[in-house]
Image (cartoon, rainbow, N blue to C red; front, top):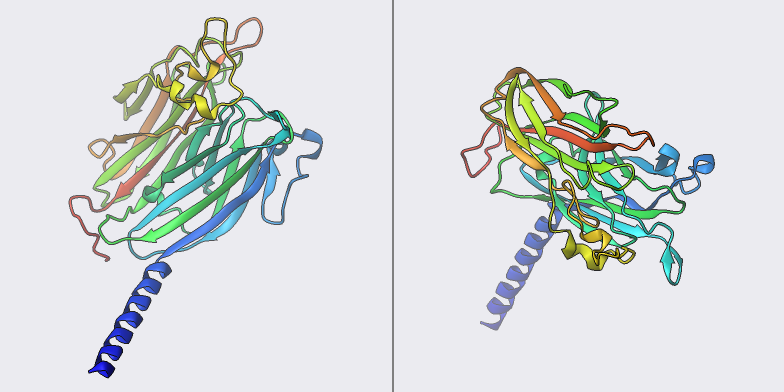
Length: 342
């Protein structure tokens, strides 16, 4: 009896160990950037380069090419991002300002896709975990990833970025992605009132198509439009307006504790507290997701992005501008709970 019981316990232990190992084998983490430096130094932008990570845009952009795992089944993909300020001394950091930034995917033949769009805190540490499962068709095999922070000092910030891949069953596998636009300065002088027009072909059998739109409003002198006075963003498909809205965030005060170098004005308000056009210092910019399945049926379509009444350049050269990106995700199946592999 004792021998049978011992054998049973041993078999259960082996089975549990095997099951645990199988689960682990279906979850993988890939490190993309590890303490990678972003800075601004035109005469020596490469001083922080490594064998795998190279610098561009005077050091403000980093780039690497890496191999991601491929899955035959639906997969949860999570992006993990850390933005780390560089200490200058015991009381300060090198870059105490809020800076626009992103981590994005670069694919030949299409606009860059912002995986995570953010604005740094005023000299503070920030961390984000973002679901990127809808970009699974592009986040596999060899990929090029870029990181950017709009800093003007050196050293500036360190970036950690990794991706976690977890195979799942009760999910629907996306079939297609297409980058549409990536514009760092959507402004009155370079882009007229007609906006930006993109032609796209929706593949056959796409039953569900969602548009992801990431936007934040800014100005070069830190006053008024288009940072503190929002404007209408208009999205049109084949001449029909499908969405119009004014990006706005009025909850920025809740991020004050992670903005250690924010300044207090004579009015009593802190710089990090002010409401802004779609962003807060120290937070990521969540994409607006629009279901365009009824408009973007299989075949060719024209999508237009415009922003009304952007503040033009004044006599001092200051102006309002927007950071805009957009992409599409398509599914062949939607009204089911389990994906059946073809």
